[in-house]
Length: 386
Image (cartoon, rainbow, N blue to C red; front, side, top):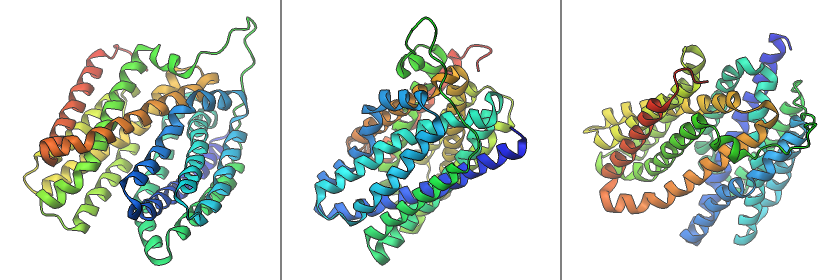
């Protein structure tokens, strides 16, 4: 495809993802606010419904993304999310709310690997890194705007309105993807009749991918601990106001946008960038735990966010280059399952750690563990990795 068509396709996807990610995060805020008065058990159930489908459905989603034309899979999943969000907006009973939200998440388990697998089909394998950078920028903008929009919409009009807005963003993203010209068709079956390797085998059968993804999983678990500990750290220990805590979230998000732009502009391998990004995340989290003042905590937050942005792009690029193009769906679905498992483990560990070590100690330990894992990954990288 021409450069103009490549840029057009990437811009369509990035803009659609920015809008849809903002809608997703706004809807999640609305649902959390809807369920919070009914107790922590229902909130935990909602968070479980956000994580479990990615893990349970990973083998199925990867096979489907690789077996059918990828853009078609993406369109069906996005349209399904738009449809399911409508009854979710009007649901009042708690159990149907959880079930419908799990359905939306289950469809998202198809969207993420399909989007990741489609990028090399748009850019070509050699330029996939710049494509992932463009998409990470759109997603980052959505995550910055979405939570604030969710709180404002829920406060002004109720949670149903925020969820209907999410349905509209899915519809817009469906239209954007329908205008994408690139196609990723399934590969022909091998003549010897052998089955394609499963996603987990692709990831963990490659030493470089295995080391890199496990390092990222630890960094993400630590990031979840950071999310839980941060309100106690910023407000309770450093004396920040509510808006000061919000500034921390904004700075982390802005850092992630900066980090996403760095990856295509430096001449380092994706594996090295991934380890360095995780090292920066760990340093940022530990820095927040050690910071004697709000200003230094904000600096550490920005640094951690930059590392987060580098990781988002470098990880996708590494998976793309280390796995066969015909099996990208399986590989991205498997990596998503690993990451969602890491989020679940970090969520389970966060509260006990904060109680045991206080917010600063929990963040320091989480950050140092991430740094140590990243350094090990750097040392284990081969001399000429992908």
